[in-house]
Length: 402
Image (tube, rainbow, N blue to C red; front, side):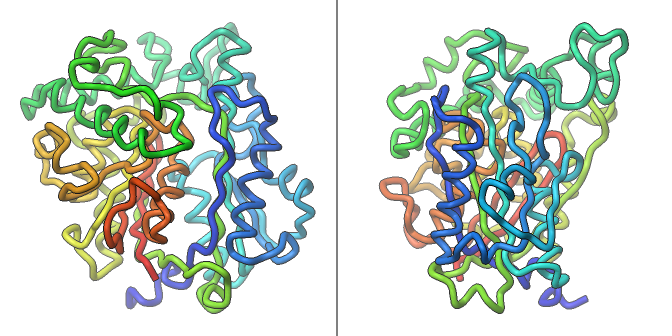
């Protein structure tokens, strides 16, 4: 198939929206969702009645930890939508699964305008329960239940109940194989904090971080430290996709979806059996570049998933923005990933400093950069942005200014 016929080539990003981001917010999860969705629709110059598709990741989860408190159905009702296509993706390619599904729905003619959103209320949940929002059981099984099920059955016997445990194994294996150091890894957190200082919505915009602060912070799971972990927040992000045939008539210059890549791991620790210095996202990176004539050298700015800082190193290599084993040296000192650097990285502050919006914040920031609306953190003449999501399923986008 000619790359011009790929489904992503038929679709454009035409609007984005984001609620306030709080730690915690005083607004309900549904109110935050409405703020983001209505902003995205208005940005495109559309009305709710124009929206004929809606989807989210992962869909409503009835748990007390705020991981996904709002689903497509209640959002559809609250907005008064009458969609011809509705989707949700609990399994799949992480947070981009909903985006990939929407692309295919539009390209196949099921709908013209799809509203995609992601809402989290983990900061409020943690405050209510006095426990870490990072302990949310996303893969099945409940504390105190007679039998652990789902992916957690692979993890609980080893007391690996937090995602940081597996990510620490990746980090230690990477350190051992390539000689990377904590000071190199810490450059990702420090860079994110510098970017956050330029982002009015970032939750840690007023809290500077030096490499000395990073190295002095407590270990959470060796070798990962406090500042290697993203920040639970309350907030919602919405993205509006439209068919290219109607996108040109809307209020915003449409952003082209140049290519997409995806892959899927297994369950829990079981998905990591084998070489901990390779990563399932490698396949997503290979797919991404197989669907475009662009090359990694064409990327002007990158929004790379940073649920934990080690994921950023691994994704940089998976997306071929660095060679294998070279990412730690590439980010060291922060010069090459700063605003004026070779590859400006996570310009919103990322999940480490702006807040854990589960990857949707990265796509939102990518659009701001390509539209030239990122304010003091704007990358000069940004035309191509690489975006990645996920540490349980894996998705990547290459976005291009239209």
